[in-house]
Length: 158
Image (cartoon, rainbow, N blue to C red; front, side):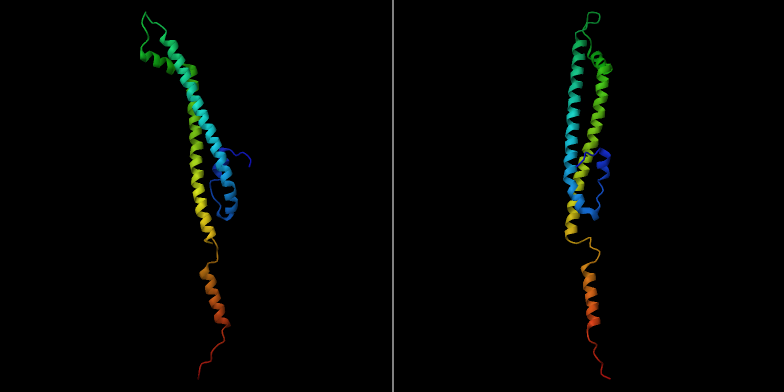
């Protein structure tokens, strides 16, 4: 199966009950694809969190060693220095974007799992001939009507 992007997978969430066989064939493959993409997204978020912590730690170490008027810098000064650092800000924005992407894939993952449950229910209904246009009642009624027409007519005594 070719690689699909987020929007293509999202567009396939709707189930066509008339093509149930096709839906069942692609369900597992797309679920696997979403799981892989979600895993990569999780790894990206964790990598960016580690890089951000590393940048913040270096800033704390560098600023902690500075002396201002012969005194060590305050905790507020250190926190402000970390928040205003350009490299830290860029990495933080990358992390926010990665988290947003991760949440999109996670939402799609859970939506696709719900789709799996719906497919299971639809499959059970299909096996039970729930979607058949002609019902057993209709067939029995038609057979009864045919039998009535084919039955010899009794003569009534006059």
